[in-house]
Image (cartoon, rainbow, N blue to C red; front, side, top):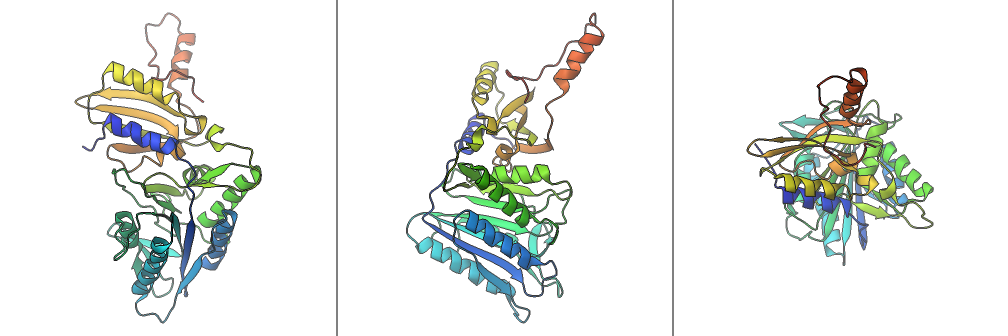
Length: 360
């Protein structure tokens, strides 16, 4: 059974919480769709261009995979390589944003982009894995971060690496395991929701915008199709907003939480647990985290409730298992209080969650 050490857990949380806006010297973007698309993908391309404008990033090059193209996979491979080559050769830190809108499906646990009419397909997972590995053929992308926006069905992907890295590879997906089929325009797609939420935060005067927090808000507000977010390397990208800013997003309590378990390789002592509890109480409101349960065998199983945006920076690490996203606090404490009020002479004892502060 996979597990993670207590030290690795704390370091991963610290990296997510201390995330700061990166200064990118260069930005490159690519929006991809099929010529024979049946999902009204051009509308999502427009949304993506508007997002880039809001973030003061360069506009995207648009790659339309032609109907007569006999090798669309090679065409897309060459285009993605050319974008990353430009980023690698540019001086300073670069970010590349890749957007795909259209049909998608899963074959043998791999995500494919699918043409609407002929059902020709391209393995998108292969491109993602190549970027994660930093192996874009004949040039170095060590100073290049990457964000994939996958606005298609079955776009949820999994796993990440545990290795510490200065690179970021982040994936914003339109669907999850329970709602795998994404929406298409004119309904509110993932790209459309991103456009609206990022623009709202800029209008409200936020100092910066963290993609994981934006995706948590969108997921919490989405009742039909739930988008997902994965940080495959590093921590979530943080973009500063220019102009008049008056709100620090880290001071805003999250509306969506995640309940998840972490299996710690070692059997933690009471002193270690006390130090850990004291430490998580220092986290800012935007990354609130509580320890709801502890189970010990030959290892230690911890049950957490945290800001969803914090969880998405941990998911994929060995030993981290998602349980549910929630909007309410742990009700166990209140149930124990009701039992005592109804039966004051009862010998039952309340199982109080291990937390030193009240639930939000």
